[in-house]
Length: 60
Image (tube, rainbow, N blue to C red):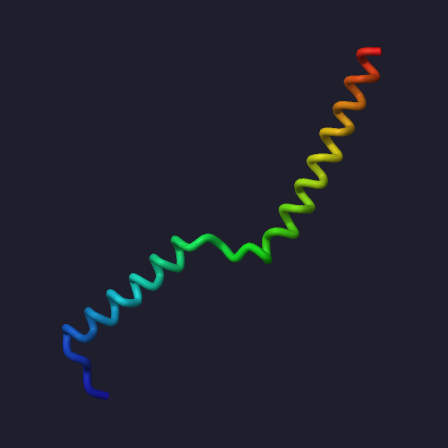
């Protein structure tokens, strides 16, 4: 197989680098993580409610 000219190789490398940088800069896809965050938020709400209830019992 014949080697590509240096300019073509550099162009392809720079395009690949740009793709990697753009892919890294984009936010992660939301649907995959939203259910996880929903579960964590629900757990946090339950924990906060339990703390509030305990504080109310302490105050009484």
